[in-house]
Image (cartoon, rainbow, N blue to C red):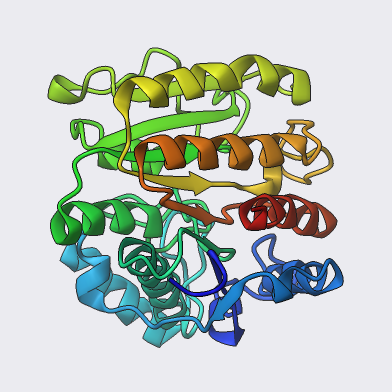
Length: 316
């Protein structure tokens, strides 16, 4: 294991996943976070890794191969959208999306190889992309790829996916709706008020996966107290399922002041989620925890939320 127990993936190629100046998911999100990382001295407490370009084969672990080829073709053309109108087919978006996938897989492999106990990939957590298509600024679902990679290449059968982004992680839930290997827990703004309109409390998995999915929708305006009430249910759920690996999607759009969501967290829930998931990981998963940045469209909130996660990850 390296001297630092936490690896941070960052760099120009990862920052390149975005849709241009003025788009909510702009390429500046990475740089805002990294500036705060340096200001707080966190860059001296982590092991830094450069982004890794993924492959079409890695993306196809989760996505239909026809969709992967469609993204490549549309990216080369550089016009139009990959979905109904949220996710532009920017020139180079195929390579940028594969870099998100490759970096998340590399972080997973580093954790599994014992090179670190934890890792953070800020431009990742693209949880809306479905197996067959893009959605909500998300081209390839790196979270889904990581879960499939852990199953197929590392032989794990209990992989926890925990999502505190304001939006429901629909691409992950429905991608593994009938798969008991994905232990899914998601606290989000109620889908009756926010995209993608899913994640109802009665959605608990199908078939042999019944009971392996936990959705906790919160009303618009819910803040730290609502999170505090909901979070023990997540911990109880994880304690029951005993995950072998924990994947945290820590979107910053659940903080108060995000321009497209309505939750009102401070950065404390991000700290609490990270701190307690580290404890769960130590008890059940050999310390293995991968965090991905997810959404967030208020730039100061991105810096606050993601560095809160990283600060907890580097605490000894």
